Amino acid sequence: MAEARPITTPLVGHFKLSSKQCPQSPEEEEMSRVPYASAIESLMYVMVYTKPDLASAFSIVSRFMSNPGKQHWKAIKWVLRYLRGTVRLGLVFQSWK
Image 1 (cartoon, rainbow, N blue to C red):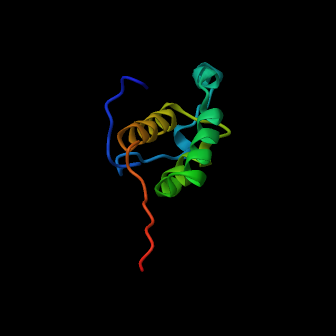
Image 2: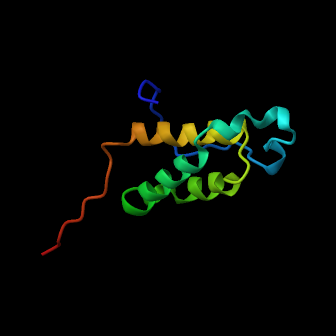
């Protein structure tokens, strides 16, 4: 993901994720080698401590943690590209005197 093109939206509407995209047969089990759960855990940490704008995207992608498909993994990679594109953005709190 280090060479991925950064983007500015956490998750877009063209990701229509559903349980129908989960692997249905043993032949489709190549997704079992993908670190989906680890990516979800990392996104949760980032969302809670630094990027509350990930809450909606996190809610969507975490639903499929038990049996992710290829489209679910593509959505995770999209969110990671968003993080890459917004690494320098943040909230600044100032006191008003």
